[in-house]
Length: 328
Image 1 (cartoon, rainbow, N blue to C red):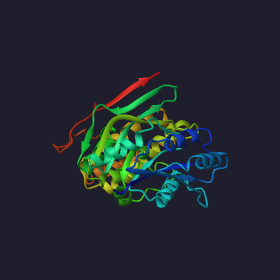
Image 2 (tube, rainbow, N blue to C red; image 1 turned 90 degrees about the vertical axis):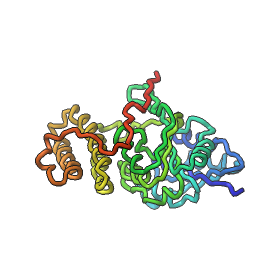
Image 3 (cartoon, helix red, strand yellow; image 1 turned 120 degrees about the vertical axis):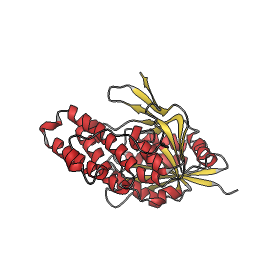
Image 4 (cartoon, helix red, strand yellow; image 1 turned 45 degrees about the vertical axis):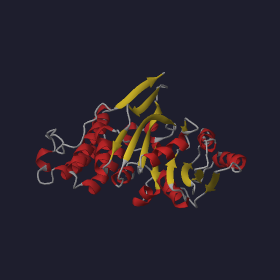
């Protein structure tokens, strides 16, 4: 029996504070005779001790059976999207997983179970729950209450925007190589996941969401989410607006996308952004989104849109399907 190879990609730039925990959560994963781990590390031209830490871990673990560690440094800083795309080009795996340098896998048998899940379910993508660390020092388990299966990529994309059952995050999933190859990873410096994950999900024949928490997520102190909430919201909606071009023929998806964008708009408005340019940007994006939903009449209803129902009777409404638990 030929062993399957799972390529796990971690990109890093000046991540010396947390990178050791991220890398150790991968190199200490349980490995059996059915698969191998190819760990791809992309040093995005760091200027701190990140590369030194990564190299030391590589030297300490590269002799482990079933584990290969490869470190690459591009000629210039590529940003998150470009670095991930660069990492994908270096990977040879049958399956792909991603892990950010400031996060880590909670369970050391996670990779083994992820491969089993994607194979036994004959899935293209399998997603897992996340332990999300909030700004106030608390944590939340973001996880579905029970296993979900979507045997239709269009429905999968709808669920991304409808209620976040499937998340934008690239690092909460395992993918087949066919899905990775089906659409090029976006090389933007920000909001690259939002411009990529819906396309991978759309191209999948089957997506499974598992009710287990596997990834510890913590946004770095200098991330855009931590530093500038308004900029983050606008960036998110900008990326989603761009995605309308791909889904303009699927009215259900665009409606769900619009409603999801309005959640971010509400957050922006609560930050009194109507006093600055952010509000004008949001207004333009709002009009753009509406032009996809109602191409003939959007100019007349920009400020008076009805919350009309989803037309496809086969789409299940799972508004309460995400379980959120506060952990002090």
